[in-house]
Image (cartoon, rainbow, N blue to C red; front, side, top):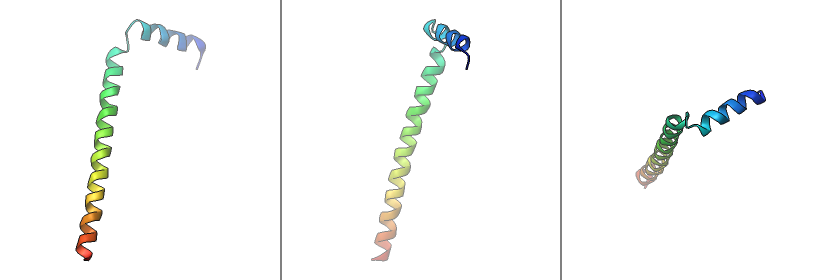
Length: 55
């Protein structure tokens, strides 16, 4: 990347031009974390069911 492009992005960021995108990115990140936690739980429960079926 060129220094001028980085400088432009920095100026836009400081002016608040990326506020909505940053908020949206944080929401997506939080959503992905919740999905990952639920996927781990489902996987754990599936293993428990398979184990109990074998008894």
